Image 1: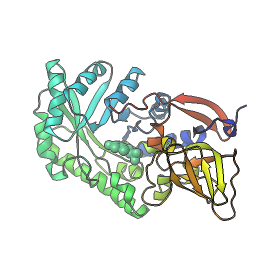
Image 2: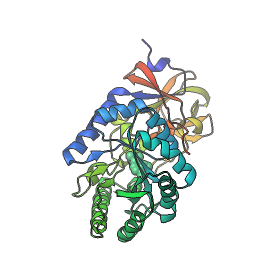
Image 3: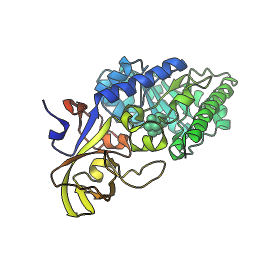
Image 4: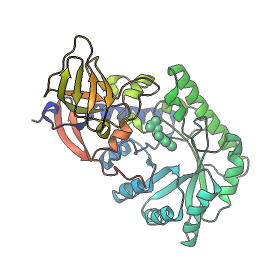
Length: 363
Ligand SMILES: Cc1ncc(COP(=O)(O)O)c(C=O)c1O
């Protein structure tokens, strides 16, 4: 039997017991709220994991990029929403063959973007479903809620485009300073989108999907009347940021990085073999220092270079060259994209591995 402590390092380890619990809890929340769950598979990029999500009741997958969709559709996934403003004829041409094999939809928040895809589908005698992105306060992409009806109407007039619904993402919840603020953002995410859907329907358009979701806001937003779908992604793994936000506890975190202490240059400094190429440079959210938490230790990962993780050793703790530690990353979704495979474990027992089949598919 192989143990996690026997692994060559750095290795990304996924605890299957925790993962399965996270998958089934979110599926149960969606069932109780009466909404479809369409998990965002950009978090893990692993077809085997997505199959667990579908087996638990997910209705389909969310993805961001056409390249991810190519991988998942080739693996047999037949209901994919690219929750991203897909723009350009080149991407549209790649989507065409996928639409033979899967029910596809893309996000849009502009006439130019949607038209660039719609024209290619129209020329091929086809149509593509679009969900209009509405900004519920994150201020990244999306039209203002009061512009949703006008924009949806214009989108629906484009050749090759069918407006299936509207969607939003409350990414600003990641900057919230506590559960109360997150709960407020979740409620307003759902309420803003449900109201925007009504304004679009008032223009005579059918809106089948009203889609919300981030991991911190999922349960709050999905329980708002009028919401039909939720798209959390990170919940399968969780990470140090979710613990900091109060979304979950450390025991709910399925992904850790096993690293080896490769140097102890002084009593207050140790160096791990995981740097930014292993853990990413993403900051702890909502705020805070460090590049991930070393489980069971007070010592903090203070500084990363590409292949070195520099630990400020806490008073009373020691690190030994050659020993292994487990690091809870700040942001699991980015760690996924840095690794070819994840090792599967239950507690300390290694059970196999999965290939991160869609890693690097950012185009
Ligand atoms: C559009 C969109 N939907 C859903 C999600 C999933 O959110 P989370 O990673 O918080 O679960 C994301 C994440 O970035 C997103 O950008």
